[in-house]
Image 1 (spheres, rainbow, N blue to C red):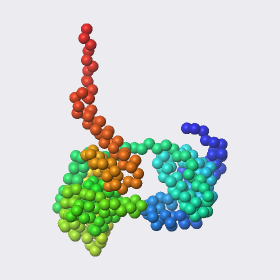
Image 2 (cartoon, rainbow, N blue to C red):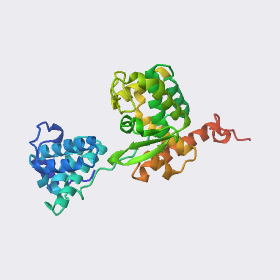
Image 3 (cartoon, helix red, strand yellow):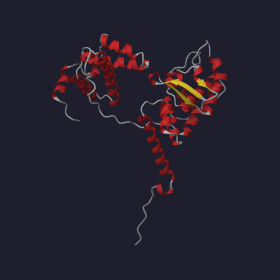
Image 4 (tube, rainbow, N blue to C red):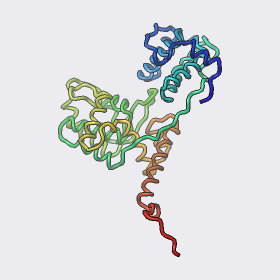
Length: 327
C-alpha cells in the first residue's frame, strides 16, 4: 500500500473518531434532508435509506455537516474505512452516496465543486456470479410439486424468477395486471422505476395460470392487487421468497444456505447465453444499464465450457502416468 500524504495522515488523527467506532446518531442535517427528499422522488426507497445511513455515518465521523467537507476530509475518511478493514464494495457504496450528495449541492449552487469526485477508491475484484446447473434448477422447481394453493404459488414464483430473470423486489411488486399469459409477457418496474417487458416460457406461463386459477383465489382474504400472496392473504415479501426457496432447496437435496432468489436470476442469464442468446437481448431482459454487468455472465459460460471440455474430450484429460521413453 502506498504511503498516505502528510495532510491525509493528519486528517485521520484530527478530523473525527475512528469510523468503525461511530455510534452516536447525528442530528438531522438540513442539506442532507433536502437531498434525500429529492432523491426519494426518483430512487427506490432502499437506495434512499442506504444514502441516509451512509451520509449519517460520514457526518458522525466528521462531527459536522457533510456539506462542509473538503477533498482531504473525504480522502482521510476513505483511508480510515480501509484501515478499519471494510470491503472495497462497502467503501465504494459509501462514497457513491457522498458523490451523489455533492452533485446535488453543485446543482443547487451551494457548492462550486464536488470534493468526492477525485477521491480514489480501493480496487475491486469483480466476482463471477454463482449459478445453478439446469439439472439443479429442475430439481429445485420440482420440489414445489403439489396441489395445494401454497404449492401452486411456490412453483409459480420459482418458475418466474428463473424463467424471466426478475429481481426478487420486482417479482413481489407485480400485480395481477402485470402478467399477460396469452402473449407470455411480464411487465415489471426495475431499478430507478424503469419499466421493462420480459418474455416467459411455456412452463412459467403454465405455472402462473395454475396459480391464478387454483392457488391465488384460495389464498386471497381481501380484494388485493398483488400477484403473489402469503398464506394469510397478505402480499408476499422478499423475506418470504427467500424462505420459500430455502425450503424447496432442502426438499430437493440442495444446499439451502446456497439458494437465494438472485441465484435464479444469475442462472437465467447464464443459461440463455450458453444457449446462444444475444448479449444485448439478455441485457434488456435483465434491465442492466451497463452492458459490462451483463458481460460477467459470458465469463461464467466460458468457464463452464472449459470445464466440460476438460471433463469430456479424450485428448483434454490428463494422463495418469506419463509415457516412458523407449530405449
